[in-house]
Each structure stands twice: as structure tokens, then as C-alpha cells.
Image (cartoon, rainbow, N blue to C red; front, side, top):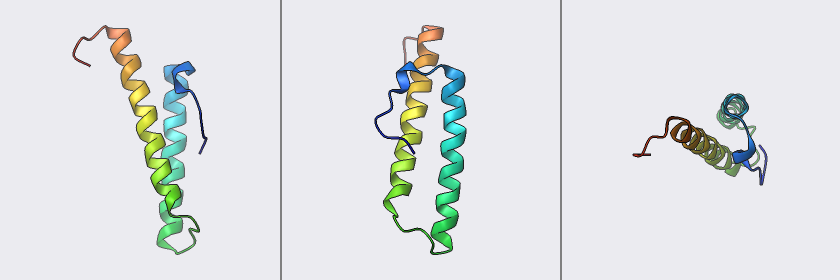
Length: 71
């Protein structure tokens, strides 16, 4: 997980790749939690928030490219 990343500078393909990577990271964190190996449970929350940020930027880029007024 990265901190203080400006996703606005990423392309759509880069954002999709990053989203896939962060989803995989969240999956690994959940596996660790279920086997009681997770040391910092707050990392799950941070990862979920990062996913939300990436999805927000993807949505903004989609709205800009299609010039949708209801975004």
C-alpha cells in the first residue's frame, strides 16, 4: 500500500492495474487475519480506503472522457 500517491496523474490502464494489485493485497490481509497472523488490523481499513480512492479517480476519468454531466 502506498501513501500520498497522486492518482490523478495515472492513466486509466495504470489505475486499473493498481486497483487489481490493491484488491490482491486486501485478499492477502484478510487471509492473514483469518489465520491470526495479521499484526496490524488497521491495514485492512487503509487498504479499503485506497481502493475507494482509486475507484473514485477511475470514475472521474470516465466522466471526463464521456463528458457526462451527472457524475
